[in-house]
Length: 152
Image 1 (cartoon, rainbow, N blue to C red):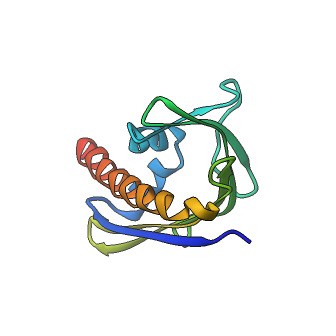
Image 2 (tube, rainbow, N blue to C red):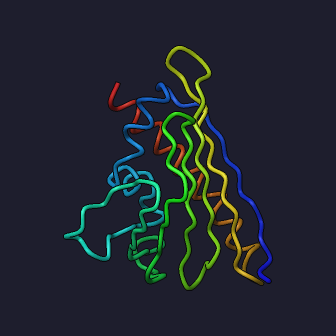
């Protein structure tokens, strides 16, 4: 059985939950907030990328733009706008367990708390991936804030 660790990063964003949710539904948002730590290129660029419950998407994942991890699969388990929650089961040959939960809650008139919670399982590499993931999700949330501030 793989050893797992959980990364949890939370920030207050300058936008309402609805504004964040609308951007969250776009694959382009994932690509923007992940760069340059990680790049996600659809394996089938002709296929329409849609985030919805039950959908599975495959990407070619590169770390720092050059280190190929190969195919990364994202299976959407929950996509609940009413609860502002997304849960995915993800993985690739390097990180077989990457279960990601995103939650959004309103904290003010035009501010929201955004939380990434990720269960990682990589066997003996779990500690290293845990450290990288902490940096990655903090980076993603900084990029989110930059994206939201640009649009306001």
